[in-house]
Image (cartoon, rainbow, N blue to C red; front, side, top):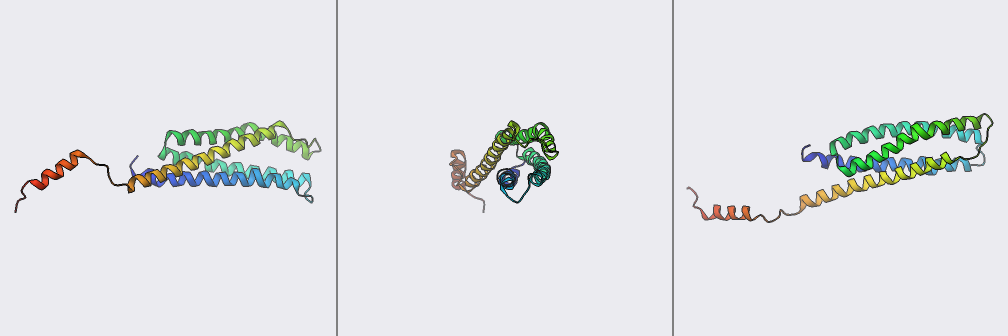
Length: 177
């Protein structure tokens, strides 16, 4: 990895973390609960809209996860991989473990079954909350790394006695005319 790569990649990680977190807040914590509070929206319609929304949202998150892996492959800090890996692991758990069961429950409700919320809904919300925290932490860590890198490059170089001595000896030695 060359020295210029981190400074180019870090803003991508921060932006990706903040955008993904914003999408998560909008879809999971705002739009989904609100649609069930709309008095003119039937339960059937709300469930159908929710199913479609989450199907599309999980595909978008899949693309974001691939981009995150690509960017981390370049940046590749331990913190970045831990936070990013946690985000991706939670997304996989939601898509593979939780959503198929919730989708079957939604299908049953659409066929006239019980509309009661299950523990899996709370599991999904818990995973989404943790994923949101990891995304924000990833973005903050990347932003902080970028800020520290910028500060370090703007600070005068530290005193180096060997350089200072070499410069003094160059000044003392006669120069050819």
